[in-house]
Amino acid sequence: MEAAALEILKNVFGYDAFRGNQAEIVSCVAEGGDALVLMPTGGGKSLCYQVPALLRPGTGVVVSPLIALMKDQVDALLQLGVRAAVLNSSLSTREAREVERRLEAGELDLIYVAPERLLTDRFLELLDRIQVALFAIDEAHCVSQWGHDFRPEYLGLSLLPERYPQVPRIALTATADHTTRREIAARLHLGRARHFVSSFDRPNIRYEVVDKNNARAQLLEFIRREHPGEAGIVYCLSRKSVEQTAEWLEAQGLRALPYHAGLSPELRAQHQERFLREEGLIMVATVAFGMGIDKPDVRFVAHLELPKSLEGYYQETGRAGRDGLPSDAWMAYGLADVVSIRRMLASSSADEKIKRLENRKLEALLAFCETPRCRRQVLLEYFGETLAEPCGNCDTCLNPVETWDGTVAAQKALSAVYRTGQRFGAGHLIDVLQGRETERVRSFRHHTLSTFGVGQDLSDRQWRSVLRQLTALGYLGTDAAGHGSLLLTSRAAAVLRGEERVELRREAERPKRAAAVRAR
Ligand code: ADP
Ligand code: ZN
Image (tube, rainbow, N blue to C red):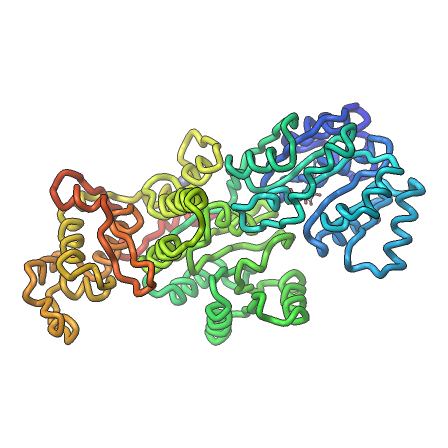
């Protein structure tokens, strides 16, 4: 089997050797076994089902959620002389009938179908009549209800093992956390599948999280310093901030295009096309952009707002540096981000179980942002992988973070929150701590509080950092109503009573970079 697989790899695909655990996966599936494959983007998942499909008699059936991606894959296969076709809603009825005819006549090595098409009676009856080499379920995390790409149609794929017990199945995804993995195995009835987990490390990506004070200016400075004239993606949360950021970058003399679901399909296609073809364009986008985009030389991915989860962060930053060359994952992160994400959680109407899960995911994301440790170690640990040594290629490795005993500062901040009635946001709290008699302070008589002016030893920026960290660490919460007020949580009491020490990271006043390390 192995010799035959290598033959195909060389003669059909023109490669000399399998990468990573491709060879093992190919043998497993070619011999009729089920497989669950977790491999990062760019790792080479396609060959894991394409080669066994060619090794086994019959047609390989590939389920994929992305019409554009199916077409690209099939075009590439046709170039190589593989008999492949797509069957999805982009075809006319006549074209679809022709594909079905060829499938039935045994003229196809591989067929790519959308899940909703696969699950029609018509298609299943067709499959009953032919020999199926294997089922490949691409982007298998789409079956996960907790994930960001949930596709209800994917749930129906669980009927495949009942109806076709003899046909091996291979599910593939670039999403790696344990919860999702278990969920994929359970929902797709892959109880007997071997799990193949590749390393998720992307060593050429440098991770950096900066303390946000003026996100756009910081972004501009980052691009000008590190990636002038190079291609990159800037992720924003809302359509409005996408538009404004793209316009702003343009006004600063950079070439940037917006991309979000509110633009017309034509304009979106046009911007995507330009991003792929032209050099050095910056795509400013919501998460609507990126899945299935295969541009090897994206030199940076920037986040102006927090992504939804660490999985999301990993996926989005993973679009940088597919060519293996040095690339940056840069994120600006600040108090407002923590407040808004905590608020979303507080106002979530999901049931308790989902809430707990959302909460865990959020804590993991915040822990990554706040960590004084190697970011790559923290990120990979989240995916169940251990990196023995700090990576030497992230901000915390390159500029080690000092921590300080923030207990007294925390007590001052928490009591300012308490004494002002847990009804105010960071700006007002800092005015109180700094002893500024603003109009607002006076109107609430906050200049008479015992905490008024007790915080003059720290700068406004340092106080913002303290409040941000206290919120990220769970000593402060936010109101569900969305006013941005900070509230004490049950954890705050121990700090106020002096029973708990608070260790905080010291923000560099001006983030420095060792020029020598930076030259690469
Ligand atoms: P994924 O689906 O995991 O993102 P792909 O299957 O698209 O990754 O593969 C990524 C790139 O790596 C493709 O250009 C592919 O041709 C290349 N590739 C995959 N396996 C090998 C291999 N064994 N040798 C050389 N190139 C490979
Ligand atoms: Zn590191």
